[in-house]
Image (cartoon, rainbow, N blue to C red; front, side, top):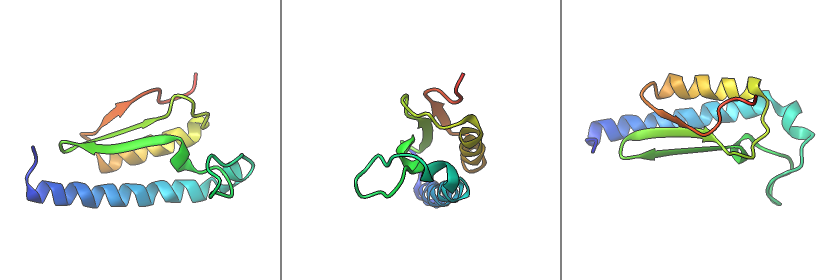
Length: 98
């Protein structure tokens, strides 16, 4: 279990990570614009529909959904960003398309 200071740092990193993922989403707008939205409230596909991120017992976990068809260049940007904020974090699922 992590203490108060570590939890505050984890929450800060999680917020910054999600902001960085939103930037990746915006930077790849052309890719997402031509795709069908996953949700009726979305006008187009979003990066958020392709990954799972959670913090469990002080450890950050990140991975792509098995049915995600994101191109590798977007996946790599997400993975580099995750590693930047959570070098001790854990990755799950398939990282790159092969």
